[in-house]
Length: 335
Image (cartoon, rainbow, N blue to C red; front, top):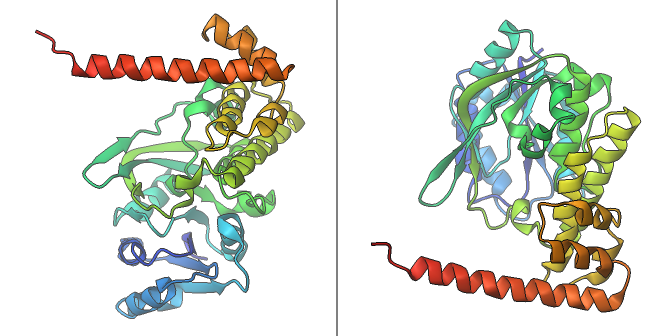
């Protein structure tokens, strides 16, 4: 049994994949299973993988390549990889990112020495001219995290979490088909519920590429992906309700955030806005941290079309005022 199974979905990443797979093949941990899932990529990603693999002959027997006959999206690719894994622990890696060369050795050793079901590490957000360290520090137990306000800012990155494979297979925890945004959150809420011990390795070992213009995370404002995020939240909500662990604060903020994405589209989608999480209108009205006029018009906009137009006008005027204020402030000189 390999110590760690690494799952890498591949789709149109020829600009970045070489850096990723070299960081994988050069890992200091020897006993690794690499599972690459070709999700019908349209570019040379798989050719690059095969060429680079030739430079690492000692890794060839550790590599599995799964070829999809039809594109299944990130959720489908991750599912294929997870169902093929045979390791003691598993972890995901996105093919446009890269990792520290001792990442998996450090995380595996930390997991074994602490008998942990999950090990979480920090990461860097990598931009063109800078790197920003993201701290995933926590002192809470897994169940405390998914039932507390910490769930709001837990940053549900699968590639920063080494997970005991037994939890995945025993409780049948796999991505939901058709949901390719926030799918990490759905999986991790279920994993956190079923695991006993989480340990935090306070080191930034993962490099998250924020400059890939084709990454799915750059499409969060497309109607298709807003609907997927909406469904993801519903999936998490249904799961926690079934376990009697409903977190009102978490769902209020996430529902409000996703609901208002429909008003940020180039062509405002009023119908989806009004029909998505309608219960949020009442919650917003009660939220004293929001401007009195805004929260009352927000609530009324769900009930009457006239108030909907008034609400949108108020939003536009507020944006103009904020823009003028910000521009004036930025041009001012402090003596």
